[in-house]
Image 1 (cartoon, one colour):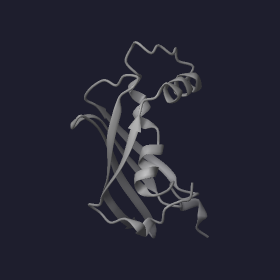
Image 2 (tube, helix red, strand yellow):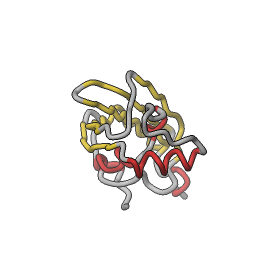
Image 3 (tube, one colour):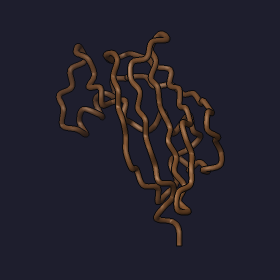
Length: 131
């Protein structure tokens, strides 16, 4: 997946993608974290911290050399195998401090119009790539 450019999106932009909790996704996720896979119980809420839905909405992955500074995760409901979510990614803020670009975006996961999880992420953009 290609990286998107910092200037591709403006503050306030809202972009969309989807996330389906498939058996394959849930099994791989549980296996990676050493968690038990139980298709009859709710999915661990940390599954909303996967980046793919945000990257699909943003049109690519974060630029190489970007530093993940912080993340705030809020959960408002449960997810189960087979659930499908509309994902809204909002560009919350972009700013430059000491000649360094920062990006803050918020990914909201909605099921049937109800907010189930929100993940807000702050990045120091392509920092290690600067001379």
